[in-house]
Amino acid sequence: MIAARNALRNWEKVRAFALGLPGAAEAFPWSESVAKVDGKVFVFLGVADGSHPLGVTCKLRDETAHGHALASPGAEPAGYGLGKSGWVRIPLEEQGAPPGKPLCDWVEESCRAIAPERLMAKLDAR
Image 1: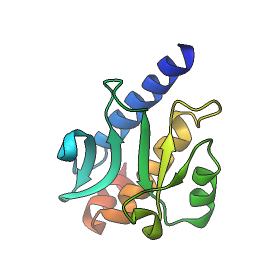
Image 2: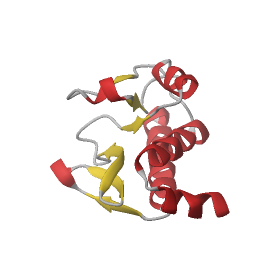
Image 3: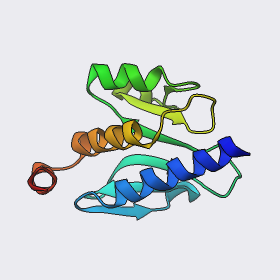
């Protein structure tokens, strides 16, 4: 029960962080939450209604970040061929799942990989 509460808390933190990035907006394709920038998905957030395990999926170009994310318990390259492009699914309910800080760092990196430079200049100016 405690693990599920921590997972939900981390999911909520990641969602709020993602939606606070310049130009970010939430959408619900395929009935799951995603954060988009300039009309392109930069993080898949899934659903928080308990129907599926909580997790986030990010695009990580940096080899170190990609390796750290894949080393998380239960993490794997994203399905539907996205893993070939650097997308990683990180479960949040696994024992030893990463806390909010590295998750938010990975979400920011994913946004930088997707967003146009003009929006990232706003992030850099913060």
